Length: 102
Image (cartoon, rainbow, N blue to C red; front, side, top):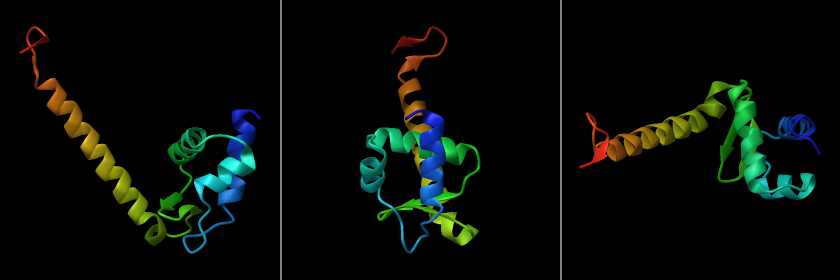
């Protein structure tokens, strides 16, 4: 199955699930015969293109109101801040004028 078909199928499937009835990654992997990494990549790309796909302990779901997506947005912002801090900590180990390990 090519990426476009998988993307469209996943989006259609997720649109039938809400925060009270999420679909698990495991279920999606079994239905579409792909691994969790591929599912996450497709979800990521859908989100980048503005699809309001929420996630939680129970799986993925489509959001129709901001209150449904708010915790996902906060989680993504927190992860981004953690990554930024990690990058900054790694850079501190180098002398910026010569970019050599201090």
